[in-house]
Length: 78
Image (cartoon, rainbow, N blue to C red; front, top):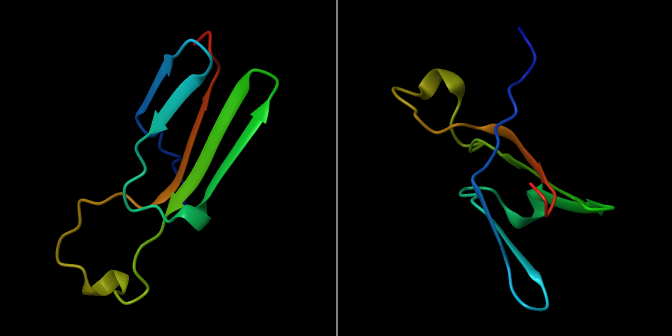
């Protein structure tokens, strides 16, 4: 099995007179599964959407939901 794909969540970023606003779409990701770090001007947001432990892989008939790691890094000049 190959390396797991890391998805990039959709992001919006805009500037107000005194601050920067960053919004990221993370549907289905629990707050405790999200990490945010700032290194210099680089903001990094990481998370993971986890599949329900109540459903086993072999029980799925159809699934279009992507599970696994999410990561996005952005700076104000991006």
